[in-house]
Image (cartoon, rainbow, N blue to C red; front, side, top):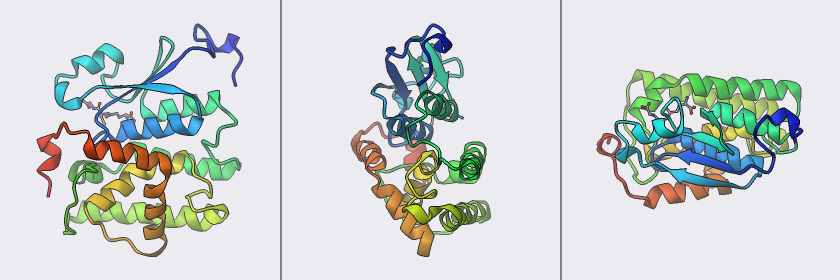
Length: 231
Ligand SMILES: N[C@@H](CCC(=O)N[C@@H](CS)C(=O)NCC(=O)O)C(=O)O
């Protein structure tokens, strides 16, 4: 762990609180929460219901970007799922957050960054919704292109780095955490997967932290029509 001095006003003893949105809908919150679980630290959660914060006032009162997740470490705020993941990885170098090997780690960061900055069609056309099951259907060429790219990423990591375990880089890591909401979407919208990608998606959805999040999402209520209306 970092020394007390380099943490500025925040002490190692300061508590962690993660501000999240609805567990059924907020994929970024899920990623931030999975990163916190991977770090192994104790943390509390404050949930802001997105359906009760349409003007973002509650979120803006917590974090300058007005988005969730946001991590409070004492009174120090870190916002954005990736910044939270990196903060915790630096703070907890012994936690299995990134792969140990330099190039595996760089590849993991590449696919996490690719997810963090892309996949607009998956986001808009297949929003996460753990509580429903849709039928398989053609969701258009943009979605098909992005699904194919996700499969390519998964198969490539499994082939090149996955021999030591069942996850993208062998052991479960931040790379898997950032793709967990995608696996959940593929299940919800009955996206057809085969072989390695199918097995990996099943493994990821069975990972205990992922399951814990999804189980709450399924039953938390606060249904938002914008998501539910997508068949
Ligand atoms: N890049 C951000 C995205 C966060 C984000 O867009 N969060 C959504 C909830 S899933 C939100 O609060 N959106 C509010 C808005 O865009 O107005 C991250 O990785 O944390």
